[in-house]
Length: 468
Image (cartoon, rainbow, N blue to C red; front, side):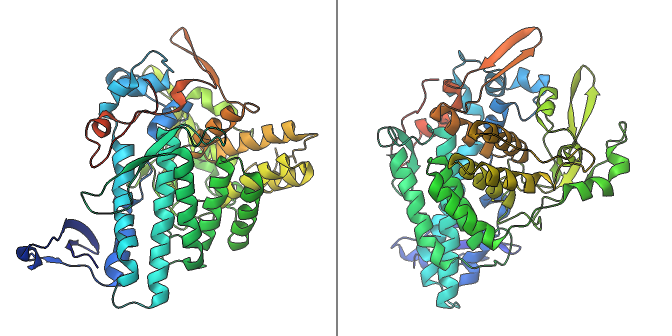
């Protein structure tokens, strides 16, 4: 096992160095320790603020799912370029100010690499415990690479995946570890191999929501295969995931419990978020860009009409508000939000799409309506029906964009569907008297690597995947 000095901060451990053959490094610094036990390495998964952040703010800006204030647009040109769909902007130059997605992703990968390298040699552990920790780190590493690949590289397309570059792959926690920017196909093969390795070691239940369980593994594979356009396998793993957990949260009950505050147009008192660590829809939990107790992002006025009438989940989370010259939908929940993990509602909607694509329209709509019955207020609710795949897909995708708002999923779906060319996503809006448009084939759908990464790629090279 590699010797790695760890400094203890409360129950969490931070890596402070790697040993070499130099004798002086064999002396453990005061207040530090060399991790050896299973508990030493397992604690790294519990470091939620470092290793479970999924920052996709620029994707949210592009979708206009996140309200961006006029002050922010004036001060942060990258936010403005994406929010106002500026095809002429040099986002590569502007990206010096937005490196968090890249570096937080690779920082987490480094931690999971460390666990993968050492878990099977830990002390004070059973073989089953070692295998479980190793498998969980493999899942989390795969999830990090999926997010990075679907942010900084073109979306998967079987005919071109072997020709286009994805993101750098690093498989060691060593500070001098080499990286290789692999093709999109190689990156997906890497993710699928990690998941193949992990599944036998994943437990049916896990010690915390941060630790992936078997349901997490199946749910994530459903997401991966959906992104690859392999709808048969996506459906297979969606069914397996739902066998592990098929719970849906009753947002209608939440609305009724907080009705007096929600329906008061002048009350902006925060109500508690149910979407935290113990949310019944969780397979696993990961934070969004913000890794602390907070409120959600506000959303633009233009975004609200895309929600269904009577959507208790929407009504419980946002309320229209005017502050000065700006009007937006103000967030009204406070607490934790599972923006980066896997949830049952995503899996239900993956299943619905796959059923629709294979021609099982009634079954697809039954799955969709099972979700909607826990969301749409009873006095408004009606079962949705569809006569064909196109009608079913329209209903399913509308619900999915709303259910997974503020996560990377709607962004991934839009890119996948735009590449497919049938159920495409584009937008037009008016802002200060000007018309702005985002087309399905815009280069803006792929985010540029930050200049800090391309200028200092470590022990490897990085080629930009976009021109600007």
